Image 1 (cartoon, helix red, strand yellow):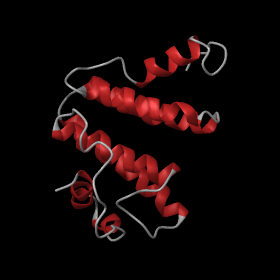
Image 2 (cartoon, rainbow, N blue to C red):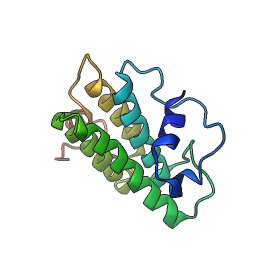
Image 3 (cartoon, rainbow, N blue to C red):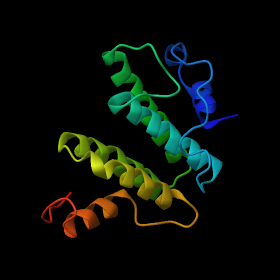
Image 4 (cartoon, one colour):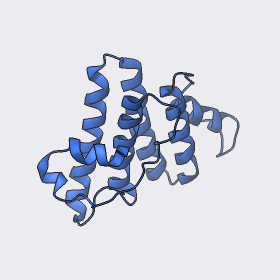
Length: 150
């Protein structure tokens, strides 16, 4: 079962009514993550897509419903992760969500894929510094302008 299919099975019936028949594989299907962490990252990514892009597992919603559905998917991912008691991982995903919103608001779309990669690495068994460190490094090195706090 693909991660996106698992997400559809886990959502509220109100949202499940908008599920597409065959969403295909998720973005993090082959990432070096434990299955639960891959699910969490995938559901948060689908929530992000509801807000800023094109979701893969759901269709047919108006803009208000997409915004609410995106929030519900963020909450599903964070709640599932919080159940494990891993507060550092919850912090990482909360940072990721906030930094993606910042990147869109500040018109810095070039950092978004980097944010997702850094968070996936941070959540992997190998670990990593995470999304906040990736953006701070980019800003400090001048890749997007002068150093700023994020």
